Image (spheres, rainbow, N blue to C red):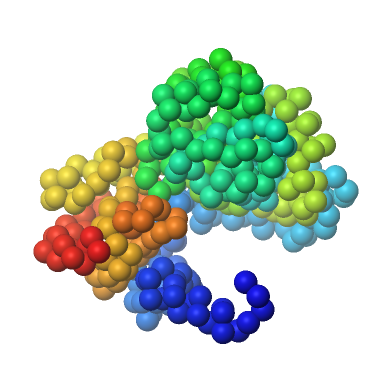
Length: 404
């Protein structure tokens, strides 16, 4: 696009006309300690029950986590001041990496500022020109961008179709360097067929990268994510990516693997080498949340119990759900306009549930993305389901609105 104010204006008008323009709404206050009831700018001062946050274990506002951050800031200050390879790597970073490695059962872990950067780092370091990167079609945008930026040939297989992935691997066995997938898909909530992908990747000597941003802390008997749930070892899945701003309630991300893999990333990964390190207080807060998550197992048990309650009630009342058994529960409504109108109706009823539209999801599958948290009450879940049933019934009564 050439520099032309009219071009920008026209592009914005086009997005508005297509009902794809994104807007932000500022959180003005939390009206209860857990943060599950919020006052949003869009709601004109009314409190809303938040069913859109990824704070699955309700740790983002945990007093012990906040206290750890405050104490660390008092000692270390607010910022790290440099990249990890200059003077930015502190004691809290080193301890957190050790604890994350132990938690995931890996030799080492490496911190990143965001999950986006972690995925860019891994894929662009392990694949290059003349090679192939193979992704699930519904992989997170960060994996897609990583594949594009790697310089490798970039290909995607149909969503969760391990057989199609294996056929692609067999066809280009000598050139496929990386197979990458979400562990839990962020917009659909389903778990990837990681076991089958692991077998195929091992057979064809490709790196398997699993971004378990939405599984770690939630799935598995110990909260170690989809790999624990599926009984997969570090040898079967050599590269594990996790984020710290979801179930663990803080900020940042990490890659876990063998000592050699982590050392290679330190030497080669541009998103690691050329970025200021996370502030040490963030690492200290994450260390605290990791301890709470492992000690207070009721949080994981509760969010999964609420998820099951939501699914059972929603199914009984005819709310259209997918196959997800994780705390991510998408309610497909069809068009972008239908999703926006459904979001507004839920907000009018006292709920904050954000509409997800293309290009985040495929065209025609705009949805309400409901997420459950350990801080929700049974009454809040039941009330949401009853409201969703009314909203979905209204959409069904106007099929042109829902499917256009």
